Length: 294
Image 1 (cartoon, rainbow, N blue to C red):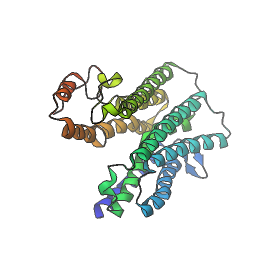
Image 2 (cartoon, rainbow, N blue to C red; image 1 turned 135 degrees about the vertical axis):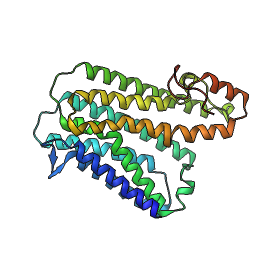
Image 3 (cartoon, helix red, strand yellow; image 1 turned 180 degrees about the vertical axis):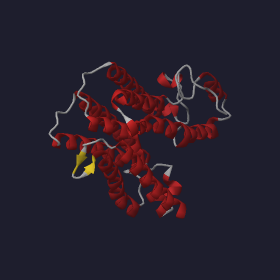
Image 4 (cartoon, one colour; image 1 turned 60 degrees about the vertical axis):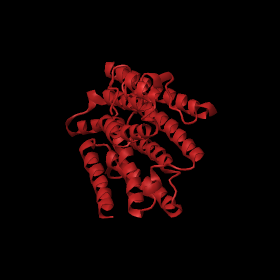
């Protein structure tokens, strides 16, 4: 219990420090820096929706909450910008659109998946402990804030400069990453829906060049947004580049690859076809990435 509440306090402190470091001069709304306000919105959204989830011991709206919080952060930053009377730059509009499209697509996809599955297996043990359950929702609030802080900082900066090389390169990377993620998710969904594929692992399409192409796409799209922001960050604002780094570490070291690779190893570890699949298919980066991990 003490560890869980300690983790909650650490999440809040981390978000506060990053928000203060990223705060943009003169970018205030109702007396608060826009970035700090966005951090508050993320935590408040998660905690409000967590209450009925805690009461019913349901994780059904967990990923959906992340989508709602992300949209609210974008809306908050854009509303604050419009309220300031400043002319909103095309760059801010594009970045707000990029993030909104990403979170709507992923949030709806994950919500449909959990409704169909009936549960999120990650929560089987978490739901047994109230502090752990609350801590998990708080971690999600931090995840939403750290993932989007670079984007909302760029929106708050509202740079008026014409579209340049950094924007073009970043936008193309975002499009590449988003396409990878969407196509990979659709391919796996279609594969899983076929009765003859029950109990089998996918080796088709993008899954033939990466064991986790959706995660590769996720990392690339946030890297693209970071590249768009690079020419306009200064001083402590460079701390917002934690966004793609955080996504990379989360997916490759914490909740993504380790969990799924271990799950696959337990299920197909002795399967000769799976062993061959691991030998020829990179774990993350298509064609060039590391292959067998065990």
